Length: 167
Image (cartoon, rainbow, N blue to C red):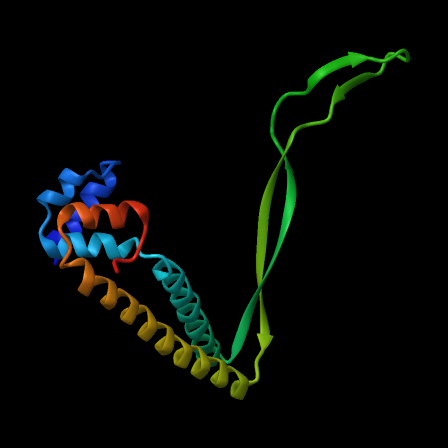
């Protein structure tokens, strides 16, 4: 399995995949490559990440006894540099262009009271939904893999190149 993943990573990093690459791969590696590109799979993976974050956040809030709110603001910071485009006005005063600034985001964390029952409910809901989405994701991947592993290299490449699920 590690060899397959290493091969897939090496081929991805090389920049381009060809039919010849698919001809040289074992069946399992080809199937994994095809199914990693399956429509809907990355969306389900993103949803799993969000649900995992919600669950962990609720659990951390319960463990701490309070939530943490990040209050962020963009602040203009003058760039340290010598005065620019200085000139004298008709009264003899020196006038320079205003200093350049950069934008920096500054955040502070504020404790926020929680309702422990609501937090427990959020945690349980995130866990339940995670399990549901994971089951859908696994079923989609397994269905793809079971079909892709049987494909000849040229056909597997076509599905991979077009981002389609094998039929």
